[in-house]
Length: 234
Image 1 (cartoon, rainbow, N blue to C red):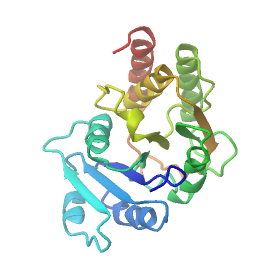
Image 2 (image 1 turned 180 degrees about the vertical axis):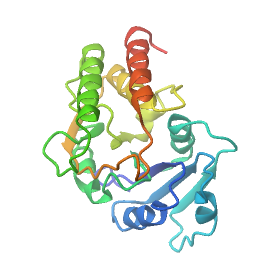
Image 3 (image 1 turned 45 degrees about the horizontal axis):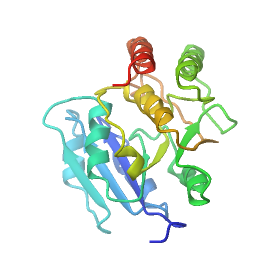
Image 4 (image 1 turned 30 degrees about the vertical axis):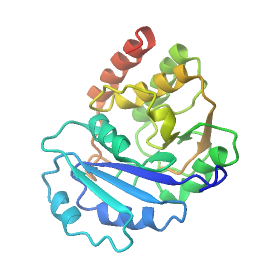
């Protein structure tokens, strides 16, 4: 495929998303930009694995990997990144908080030759569900702290939607197993000195009753990882 139309792998870490996973996969496959879907089940215990094993891959675009124990989002992403075969790699969560209809604007800066990495942003004007003020404040604060160390001027470091050239991903040695993967990716992107763009994305957040997993402990851990990767190179 030509450089103007790079192929796209969507990497989806999955953990206990039985209620949403099939609907999410249908939405991802409905996007014409997608050439490959790499799902990594991180030892789900709610029946998600049974759903994935029984799934009908009618178009041959889907590959599924199964972790033998729960290791976290970062570990699942590393498995997916290693398996991805396309020119570009796009991260997609499995919980339907993010809308695959946003893929065109996420890919556009790279396809136009303007960017090497694209971050989505929930804070640049896209539609979003109104939920937790303290989560919003924590996200903005973590992004500000990250920016102080990376020198980037991002508005949403913790966002799920990030798109990379596969060659650039291969230049990063990633170590975080859990949600620390977000500040780690951001810090290591900054060190690559590549062109980074940010675009608005829709956000349909969930409540904890609806299955939201990230909590205050993950915010504290994120501070640790921002400081670690801001001070040290590994």
